[in-house]
Length: 256
Image (cartoon, rainbow, N blue to C red; front, side, top):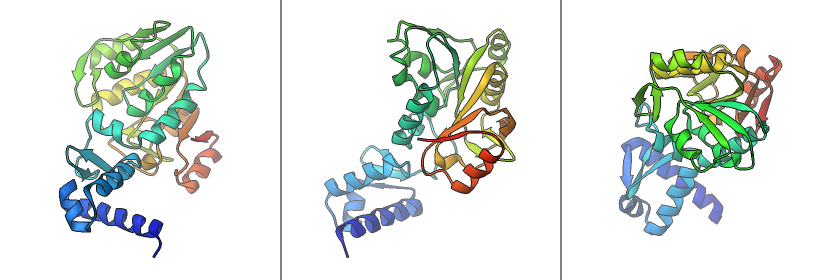
């Protein structure tokens, strides 16, 4: 058995162990698989970068153990893929544009690539996005008020929706918990879904930013049907059959 095969087999076994127990420490995994803790940490880091496990202090947990992850947890998942998606999304932006960003971790991945612009307006209800734009004085940030939703670190509520009707954006970038042909973009938190719907309606072009885990998944409520989308940016592991089906409906899909 080759080294690469043994590595893949061990990491698959680690995934299975975490799925069975929910959470294990580095020491427990080291003992269970008879490898050093340094080796285990390398395995967990590789699995974490693929979005397959969540790193914790001294160990890891299966990504299936929580119904809705906190922002920081979600930001760890598929980080490499989200960075590629963010870079391609930023390539659609031009100087002088007004863009909208939702409070998803994938939309937040655009921000590092906005440094090159000298004139940009960003509409967002995400406190994380606003904080990320603090160091970019050339970017004007517009934030409606509302109530703090800690899970997504965002401002939500009826005040938010009424203020949003005053804005217009050329481009809007939206993450989602699920994407299907029938249900479109779906998400879980009702108040945030309302805001996403309001923002989508104020954008000339709506771009979905969804990694491959979200394809074929359906969450609580649709906030944007497929017919509303002007493009989807995803990673190379998106299921080909669904990609082809959505492209056949006239929605361009870009693989990062």
